[in-house]
Length: 448
View 1: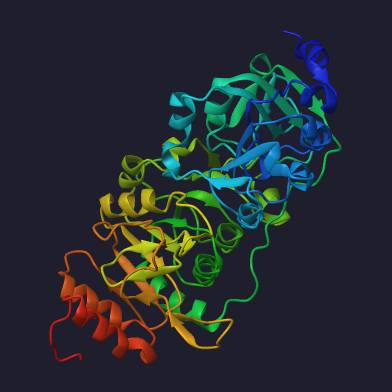
View 2: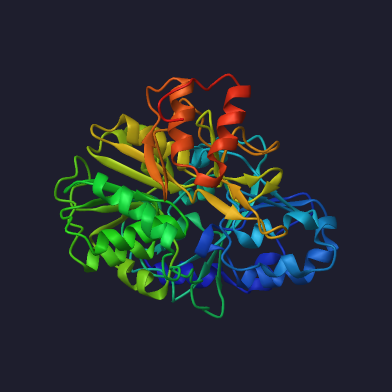
């Protein structure tokens, strides 16, 4: 089969590709670092003539050109699967909205959606001799996107790393309607984070001793999980495995330090499994054609049965705040949207199902109010009105602050309240006790 001829037949300009989008269409823009660039720039030029276009995407690492047009809310709506700062800052402009979900369900949501997917546009690596393009570090839901789209547009970028994995990280030329060759921009980089704070280090020192040789790790997004990853890289741990929704630079640090072999994994032995990745150039270079790394669909990676099949699974994520009931909010500050649920609940549930597994929700005990300079507790009597419950109280396992760690599984309400108050900032503990008494979840004890 001469795939080069097919390639030439399907090759179009970005302007031609953008021209197929009509008012009222549902359009997929790609995912994370696979978000399209050239077609986006072309679409921005004609978007002012369109109306009611609905676009799906998520974890934007740069602001799409369409975000910069005049009065974007009059022409399109951005429906985010997971908020990043770019999307979060666009909410107040009236065109950006979050779609709540458990990340593991995302491919199914495409396949069962009542709204048709008219056009899908995404970046890929150059075609190989077998006619396949690679999604890079963005397997996630992309197979479902291709399967359900009426028109599929692939934007080739020679800088996209080729990430080995399951068939879900590849799209064949026969599945593509249009091919665009853009300017081959560098893949978006996400900083690995600066030096860990004293609070980050204190939390890491409490979590790392809970990890045993041969454990399998998942790290969430944020500075605190990244700090824990760096501490693991400098530890004496060995034979660690990786099974994570997001691949980050900390895993590269661990691998280069010789901590990762995957030799004790119950499934996918020897492989670092992930659904998508975003990080620095160092990370992309590490993932590029690395046979130790396996990109796979999120419906497999984040499935609680898959996670539960991995012994000694350790899930490490962060949160905005936690209340005395053990409810975890990792998504909002009151009604202000910060992030999304992502796969946090998937991994909280999966880790508990794992033999020897543990899930850790990590957060600083407090923060300083920017307006008043006062200390505000992240451990609260109840969540701020409007705040989102990411992990319900029945599912929360370990909560960790710089003042300690507690496992909430099996604790009654008075025990939970007492345990959480003991790891709150000392300046707010008396106030939390008074509030717990009003809520009838406090019992006199020798720890008062």
